[in-house]
Image 1 (tube, helix red, strand yellow):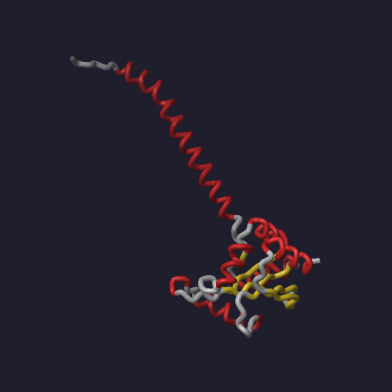
Image 2 (cartoon, helix red, strand yellow):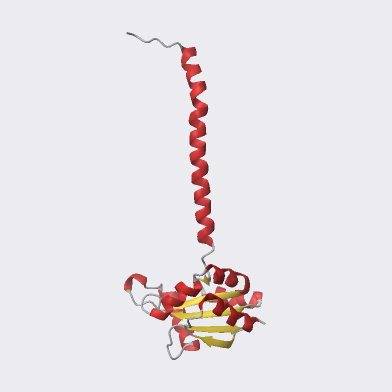
Length: 171
């Protein structure tokens, strides 16, 4: 049996099929776009700490906000890791920080895999010499207009406890 297709029958076939194929692709593209946008939006909220000390300092002064300087050992200090997970990464603290203060983490990792760039490591060492000469970890130093107004370490008070302490310093 031989099938013979005319040009007009092939054209009609594609006219019927093409909208179905395009709709399927567009639906897939919409889902991909929405998922990608959602992931980008979600991941964008997680950044509490400035990546450079000078930027944090300038922002703090320009916006007249507290500067929270956190000394941490991100890969070896148990209380530092707890403070990060329980407080700094908490959505309520992230919102408060974004609206009310500027933060910088002076990290001192020990594992080779987590080694900081030399410039960042040197900056953190200078900050430690100036604000944490005894080497306490974690140490949270709160500065207002370049002057130390408070210090604290890890306390099991959760994000709301830290927020309340910081609000008292703001007022």
